[in-house]
Amino acid sequence: MSASSSLAVRRVVSATPGRIRIRDRTLRNPGRLADLEAALAEQQGILETSANPGAGSLVLHFDQRRIAVEELETLVDATLDRLLATPAPTGKSRRRHINRLAKIGMLGSLATSLALLAAGQKRGHAVAGALFVAGLGVHLGTHRHSIFR
Image 1 (cartoon, rainbow, N blue to C red):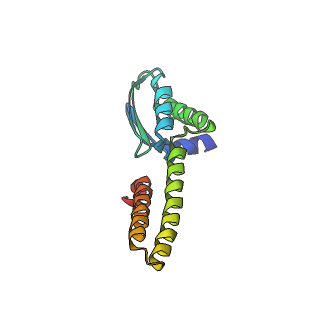
Image 2: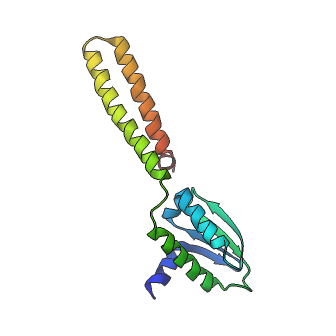
Image 3: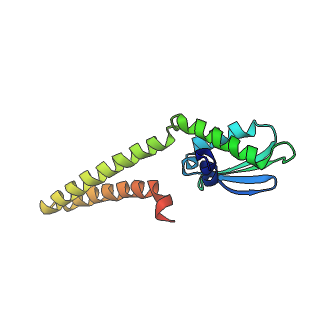
Protein backbone atom coordinates (compact mmCIF):
# COMPACT_ATOMS: atom_id res chain seq x y z
CA MET A 1 0.00 0.00 0.00
CA SER A 2 1.43 3.38 -0.98
CA ALA A 3 1.57 6.44 1.25
CA SER A 4 -1.11 8.24 -0.76
CA SER A 5 -3.55 5.33 -0.49
CA SER A 6 -3.05 5.15 3.29
CA LEU A 7 -3.88 8.87 3.49
CA ALA A 8 -7.03 8.29 1.47
CA VAL A 9 -8.12 5.62 3.96
CA ARG A 10 -7.90 8.15 6.79
CA ARG A 11 -9.64 10.95 4.93
CA VAL A 12 -12.43 9.07 3.15
CA VAL A 13 -14.33 7.61 6.07
CA SER A 14 -17.25 6.16 4.14
CA ALA A 15 -18.02 5.44 0.52
CA THR A 16 -21.25 4.18 -0.97
CA PRO A 17 -22.30 4.23 -4.62
CA GLY A 18 -22.67 7.88 -5.55
CA ARG A 19 -21.61 9.29 -2.16
CA ILE A 20 -18.43 9.63 -0.12
CA ARG A 21 -17.69 11.35 3.19
CA ILE A 22 -14.32 13.02 3.78
CA ARG A 23 -13.21 13.79 7.33
CA ASP A 24 -9.99 15.44 8.48
CA ARG A 25 -9.16 17.54 11.56
CA THR A 26 -7.81 20.30 9.35
CA LEU A 27 -11.26 20.71 7.80
CA ARG A 28 -12.58 22.09 11.08
CA ASN A 29 -11.13 25.36 9.84
CA PRO A 30 -14.13 26.82 7.93
CA GLY A 31 -11.91 28.62 5.42
CA ARG A 32 -9.98 25.48 4.56
CA LEU A 33 -13.20 23.45 4.29
CA ALA A 34 -14.73 26.06 1.99
CA ASP A 35 -11.60 25.97 -0.20
CA LEU A 36 -11.81 22.17 -0.50
CA GLU A 37 -15.53 22.28 -1.20
CA ALA A 38 -15.05 24.89 -3.94
CA ALA A 39 -12.16 22.98 -5.53
CA LEU A 40 -14.05 19.68 -5.60
CA ALA A 41 -17.37 21.19 -6.70
CA GLU A 42 -15.66 22.27 -9.96
CA GLN A 43 -14.76 18.68 -10.87
CA GLN A 44 -16.83 16.88 -13.47
CA GLY A 45 -19.05 14.21 -12.00
CA ILE A 46 -19.54 15.95 -8.63
CA LEU A 47 -23.26 16.66 -8.29
CA GLU A 48 -23.55 18.13 -4.80
CA THR A 49 -21.43 18.92 -1.76
CA SER A 50 -22.41 19.31 1.88
CA ALA A 51 -19.92 20.69 4.41
CA ASN A 52 -19.91 20.36 8.21
CA PRO A 53 -17.07 22.45 9.73
CA GLY A 54 -17.86 21.33 13.28
CA ALA A 55 -17.13 17.73 12.36
CA GLY A 56 -14.46 18.61 9.80
CA SER A 57 -16.29 16.67 7.12
CA LEU A 58 -17.49 17.05 3.57
CA VAL A 59 -20.02 14.82 1.82
CA LEU A 60 -19.76 14.51 -1.95
CA HIS A 61 -22.60 13.19 -4.10
CA PHE A 62 -21.29 12.17 -7.50
CA ASP A 63 -22.34 10.52 -10.73
CA GLN A 64 -20.64 7.14 -10.60
CA ARG A 65 -21.00 6.76 -14.37
CA ARG A 66 -18.77 9.82 -14.88
CA ILE A 67 -16.20 9.25 -12.12
CA ALA A 68 -15.16 6.08 -10.30
CA VAL A 69 -14.96 6.00 -6.50
CA GLU A 70 -11.23 5.18 -6.60
CA GLU A 71 -10.57 8.07 -8.98
CA LEU A 72 -12.56 10.43 -6.75
CA GLU A 73 -10.68 9.28 -3.62
CA THR A 74 -7.37 9.97 -5.38
CA LEU A 75 -8.66 13.38 -6.49
CA VAL A 76 -9.78 14.21 -2.93
CA ASP A 77 -6.43 13.18 -1.50
CA ALA A 78 -4.45 15.20 -4.06
CA THR A 79 -6.67 18.28 -3.65
CA LEU A 80 -6.46 18.15 0.14
CA ASP A 81 -2.68 17.68 0.02
CA ARG A 82 -2.43 20.74 -2.24
CA LEU A 83 -4.61 22.81 0.10
CA LEU A 84 -2.66 21.70 3.18
CA ALA A 85 0.56 22.86 1.54
CA THR A 86 -0.75 26.44 1.67
CA PRO A 87 -1.11 28.34 4.96
CA ALA A 88 -4.49 28.01 6.65
CA PRO A 89 -6.84 30.99 6.63
CA THR A 90 -6.25 33.25 9.63
CA GLY A 91 -9.62 32.96 11.37
CA LYS A 92 -8.29 30.61 14.03
CA SER A 93 -5.25 32.73 14.89
CA ARG A 94 -7.51 35.70 15.68
CA ARG A 95 -9.43 33.53 18.13
CA ARG A 96 -6.18 32.37 19.70
CA HIS A 97 -5.03 35.97 20.04
CA ILE A 98 -8.27 37.00 21.77
CA ASN A 99 -8.03 33.97 24.07
CA ARG A 100 -4.43 34.85 24.93
CA LEU A 101 -5.46 38.40 25.83
CA ALA A 102 -8.30 37.01 27.96
CA LYS A 103 -5.88 34.75 29.85
CA ILE A 104 -3.46 37.64 30.47
CA GLY A 105 -6.40 39.75 31.68
CA MET A 106 -7.53 36.94 33.96
CA LEU A 107 -4.08 36.63 35.50
CA GLY A 108 -3.76 40.38 36.01
CA SER A 109 -7.25 40.79 37.44
CA LEU A 110 -6.75 37.83 39.80
CA ALA A 111 -3.52 39.34 41.17
CA THR A 112 -5.17 42.75 41.46
CA SER A 113 -8.22 41.28 43.16
CA LEU A 114 -6.12 39.47 45.76
CA ALA A 115 -3.97 42.54 46.39
CA LEU A 116 -7.05 44.74 46.84
CA LEU A 117 -8.60 42.19 49.19
CA ALA A 118 -5.42 42.17 51.30
CA ALA A 119 -5.51 45.99 51.39
CA GLY A 120 -9.14 45.99 52.54
CA GLN A 121 -10.47 47.55 49.31
CA LYS A 122 -13.66 45.52 48.98
CA ARG A 123 -15.14 47.56 46.12
CA GLY A 124 -11.93 47.34 44.04
CA HIS A 125 -11.69 43.63 44.88
CA ALA A 126 -15.24 43.12 43.54
CA VAL A 127 -14.50 45.05 40.33
CA ALA A 128 -11.29 43.09 39.70
CA GLY A 129 -13.19 39.86 40.41
CA ALA A 130 -15.81 40.83 37.83
CA LEU A 131 -13.05 41.45 35.27
CA PHE A 132 -11.66 37.99 36.04
CA VAL A 133 -15.08 36.41 35.48
CA ALA A 134 -15.44 38.29 32.17
CA GLY A 135 -12.05 36.98 31.01
CA LEU A 136 -13.03 33.49 32.11
CA GLY A 137 -16.21 33.79 30.02
CA VAL A 138 -14.17 34.66 26.93
CA HIS A 139 -11.78 31.77 27.61
CA LEU A 140 -14.58 29.23 28.10
CA GLY A 141 -16.39 30.55 25.03
CA THR A 142 -13.25 29.99 22.97
CA HIS A 143 -12.95 26.38 24.15
CA ARG A 144 -16.66 25.55 24.29
CA HIS A 145 -16.44 22.84 21.62
CA SER A 146 -13.79 20.84 23.46
CA ILE A 147 -15.42 21.39 26.86
CA PHE A 148 -18.84 20.08 25.84
CA ARG A 149 -17.72 16.94 24.00
